[in-house]
Length: 572
Ligand code: ADP
Image 1 (cartoon, rainbow, N blue to C red):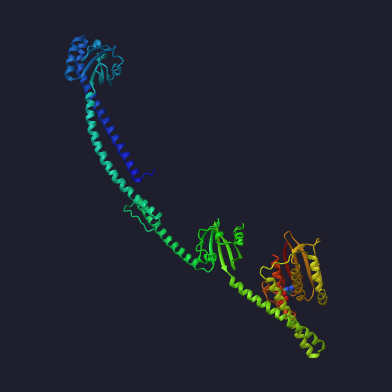
Image 2 (image 1 turned 90 degrees about the horizontal axis):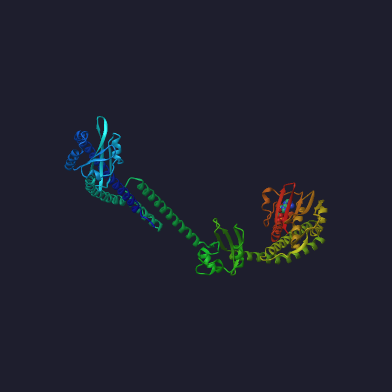
């Protein structure tokens, strides 16, 4: 159960006040009582001197009867019981009771002390008097010898009555002081706990989302320091919250104004955030709170989201006749994914139009170019002198145009979306040898040596043999084209995962600044040489495409005037 701080402080005060009151009451009563008893003892001791004077001669004369009469009278008047006890403990005289009826007093504590020469005092309940009594005993010496003991006793009733009356006075005084103290404690507790209560109330207000609350503490102590810190904290939270809200609004503004569809999914696939573009893609009014498979019916998306890797990916996704560039990025916290969907249907349509144009133009050009080539060849046969020279130039350029047209058609064919290569188990060595036959004559003409390095067991790999043939032909063609002396070397190696084909030459090499761009379409490092050799600038672009449709990789290493090596890795 919760105990308010006010109650705790007040309970502490109550405990202290009551303890103090009880202590004061007990100590003061005890002190007063002791003081009274000591005073009475003193009075009795003084009275002893008188009785000693009276008793001495009578005891010497052994006039016990006379002594009895005298002491009874004296005791009566002094309101004090007087007893004379001999050394054996026998009561000789008692001012109130007949001595014969009294038992031996030798063992009474006060008598024992008196017989040793001291003053004995004791408080106890008297069986004969039937009340609590104070006894004081002293020895009666005659001629330096203890002859008897004089014992004086007084009922304690009077002292007790006095103490009781005094106790009542002290009690009422203590009660008044206690009540006043408690009232003061109540007020104090209230004031001490007040700032804590207001701090508590303010914290609850902040917890409920109102950050404008502040507390004031008029005191100049730790609580006021606490209040200042609290206000400081509240101010900072308020500022941070406003900043956060502003940032959130800005972010929401950006997200909702984005053309791209944006969604944040948790690890269970529930949509936590989605912007209007994303909702538009799904065709639903709102997708927040739903699972992504309720919003998108796409097996491809399901597979992408259920993939085990946690790195981000970008893939093309087809949804309801539209194409999206989808990127999935895992949240840094690992608690979900961010999906961004960029509609690239328009871009793809334009690309298709461009591609169709290239294909159509290439097709249209091929027939007239072949005709021009044929007629030029016929004319060359009959021509002579300058005319023959001009016709040869026309023939060369027509060849180059035909090459370009063919390369463009090849590229378009490779880039055809969704077109899969015709994979077959292929023996790479015999395929390479088949390609090399085509270049034998050219190698001889240029005086270039051909070296081959093949593994012992011919690697069989699942590839499209026509495309790989085309790839090798392009690379070997380049190697011969750009090498004036030396050799061309083809090597085939295998590793655990892939088959490595290397086409190496000792040709002119490629300057460093061109190396990164040679795979681009129409990019030629040495324009004049490429043109004069009938180059199109499309050969390596075709090679790269062929490698990528086989999920392989291609790299180039080249040093000007030393040679170039193309390395292709095709996975098994
Ligand atoms: P091209 O038809 O001009 O040869 P490619 O796409 O096949 O076009 O090659 C692009 C460019 O890369 C070439 O123009 C040439 O400058 C350079 N290149 C390609 N292969 C080699 C090679 N083996 N040695 C030197 N340069 C090369």
